[in-house]
Amino acid sequence: MTTKTRAAICPGEGKEFHIADVELDELRDDELLIRIVATGICHTDMAVRDQQLPTPLPAVLGHEGAGIVEKVGSAVSAAKAGDRVIISFNSCGECPSCDVDAPTYCYNFGPNNFSGRRPDGSATITCDGEDIGGNFFGQSSFATHAIAHERNVVKVPDSAADLPLERLAPLGCGLMTGAGAVLRSMEVREGLPIAVFGVGTVGLAAIMAAKIAGADPIIAVDMHDSRLELAKELGATHTIKAGDDAMDKLEELVPQGLAYAFDTTGVKKVIEGVFPLIAPMGVLGLVGASPPEDMLNLNESALMGGGKRVIGILGGDSDVGSFICELIAYHQDGKFPFDRLIQYFDFDDINAGIEASESGEVVKPVLRISAE
Ligand code: CXF
Ligand code: ZN
Image (cartoon, rainbow, N blue to C red):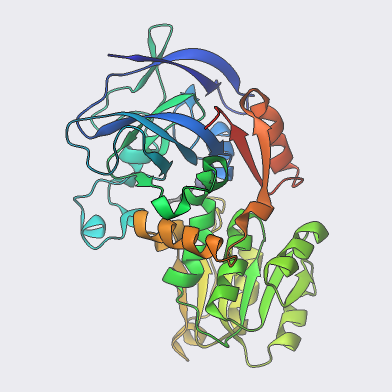
């Protein structure tokens, strides 16, 4: 049976979203039908709208959904009808990366998340009888209902039954990316210095995680004063306003060099600028989206000498389920107060939420789609 749904459609490059009636395909054996309660808005949705990422438009985007399972296919064991779930990115489960529980580096990441179809090419969403883009991050959750998959739903633990799904929704992308970069990819050690460049959702999650790891000092660099203030409240010991003298100020603060630098900006000048400040055995983690033609210029002997590492990071090396539950537990302990980043918008106001994110006014807009 197909399911009638209200969805926000991104109609074409650079265009505003509009809400329309669409139809979801019948469930496959490994799929779940979820009633969406809330979905976070992430810059990746905007990157698709602007066609910097290849998902064909028109499409239903949204990839930070949380909701309640309505129906499951016969091969699903991750959750059952009535369960509260967070939805994250999808992966194939069969490639060398999935084999070692590193699904963010799935060899089939594109077909499972960005193609707008299932990996076999079938559409999950139609509008007026025509196929449109769906299955975005294995969910397309800017909608009242979404089809998710065995591998990208995380059942909210019973111990978190008191936490509203609308708060948990953004854990499946930016928050796990920033926190995972610090706790998993870079394995930040207690007492060592870290600098985080860009303190939006990913950078602020990294700051909170750096505090959990006991890094010291924790230095936030950004161009918005309001975000630097929030970074300080969430764990930054020092803040530096982005600008020409930022690297000099950093050097003054950490004359021995940075054990860790985490770049969320994707700006070549920032990445190349901080590289000389990396300490022996230091790690420069890169997560920012940069223009596809950009090439980095790094001095080879400086990289080799001292065993420095420059690493690309996707999704904070999250293994989805257990890391998201770990983050929920930190939140319950008061160590990961990510709710400070969220501002809620009604589903119908999706374009206002997007605008608030792009202007920098709101760090993490979350759409309220249906009552829990
Ligand atoms: C993603 C990238 C790949 C892993 C999960 C998160 N970013 C989305 O915005
Ligand atoms: Zn995202």
